[in-house]
Length: 190
Image 1: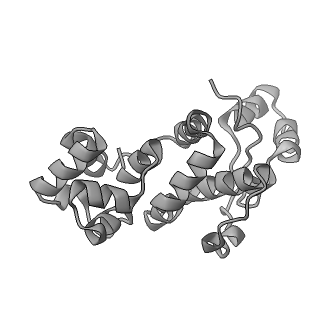
Image 2 (image 1 turned 45 degrees about the horizontal axis):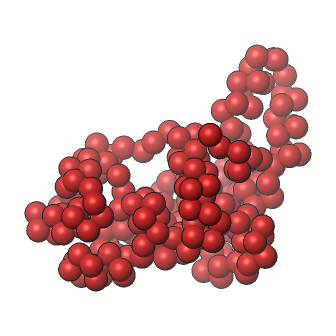
């Protein structure tokens, strides 16, 4: 599991993790932004991070070694569950402090980074909060093709029609659609 994801799940900042683990903040920042490889860290660094995050050392390096990138539908589901479990404000604080949007984009995981930005902007609108100005330039970024939910694509195939795509675009949340991501339901997750 990526450190950025663990930070979001636990609602802690990189600074706090650095302070509690004893790992220098600059080292942790490089790991989170992909400038340093977690699998290349010393055993002591891995031990300190794992102990502080409450996970095994294997958990920290497993994704890096296998370069595991979860399916996008799984990623979306995890984000929606995180919002549900933490609440809007705590989730936003975690996103802001962990720099997850930038971390995903640094890894060239554009769908994930832009989805996370869409979620952050949506939650800001829903809670009458100002948008994070660090993302101003990113708000113009779009995926090269429209990304539909798997359920919409299945419906199109089953009906042999593009009508579900057209309907889903009309119902899409604007903050996601800005990035060519069609998303209409982020609240009703089971």
